[in-house]
Image (cartoon, rainbow over all chains, first blue to last red):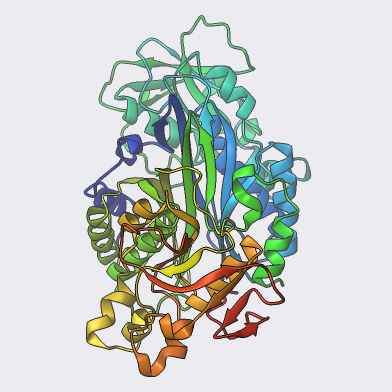
Length: 286
Length: 286
């Protein structure tokens, strides 16, 4: 039995499409007919990603939203989604969630596959988007001297998960930053969405770009200042984390939380302290 | 709880991409930059599509192969695959099967998603292909007067499933007819792959094209003539079923098994007997 890291390493020994970017990015790219299409595949499994008593309308909404969030981080506009659906739960509620999220973000259904499920339900979406700006932003393109920015506060999904009424929607129905991503794409160095925790995702972005990110925790916008450490480590907020010239005039609201520095010993420097290991920085799948 | 037909009907009330063809075809199409990309998504679930003691190398091989078979029925050449993988089985064997099938059909890995599984494992593939001939063949384009053809015998997967050594590979490692599909695409009316049983798939093709297919069972090539009825109803052979002018010179081996007639009472006429209902014709998912 392998963990996720071992499995990814094994996958990298297979023939990879050049657009797979060595499986080090969230999305795959295909250049075709002068356009760039962008693909993302995410799965949600009962007991792992949602509770057995979850409203499947929320599950459907979130599943599509998190796929669109990856497209947002590429500055892409959605083309459509393919659905892999296990029958057997409250499929009517699932359809209702799909109806809401596809209408809200104007993304049509392209096709998919329906299977009978035994045991835990699994739902999968492949989202297809079209690049609106090239080069397509990636995790690997941060430049030394740029500022590090985030489009909004982190920790709201955590509060929603805990049941705070005003933040429930942040956990159950995250909003992909598609408009923000498209506006930012021509201006950014690196960009990614914050799915697993701001500090962990910043650590990964730094490694992918082979730089160090120096962050000032007092600048990081958090949903609950009394629990700032947790907010910076909790995932599911789907804000965009990006680097850009420090003096650029940004077309969307964003907060500068640090800067890109030459690669030192540590990928991340938090309030002057080097962070060498990603353990404890956020949520690792696997 | 919905069955597959009800769920598909509900999905059709959502905003659909024009390339979804009303979810009545196996694949979705996107026209972009003067090219046509073709998408297919298939899932294999433990206990439903494979036995818990199956070799995951075979499961990985078959999962990719059945996705490529849908591309074959469109005359497409594969561009790449996205993988949705549940960790927790013999993931090393899964990788080995992926290695063999991706090498054999020259289809690179583009990306995907890995999740921790609880309970039954689910594996999903989205295959992306590029149309080589337009219009892209579909189920809906059979023309009255054309012949009905199949590229090879049906029933070999059934015999393999039952353990006949010389047919094991037909069940465990089906061969997508990519070369045949590309050669046939410019010549055919309608085309689809035979995944759920020849008679059932012919019934569906007839309905999609709004014609009747008159088949002569004595012409249908079967793996075991003593069990012809079963062979015509068993799935998993992945031969191509297509319609084409009766006098066309076909570029690949294929057997004419009937002809396309104006729509009568029944979508299928087998040896002169109308078949009004699809029950008992093959394997229905759900």
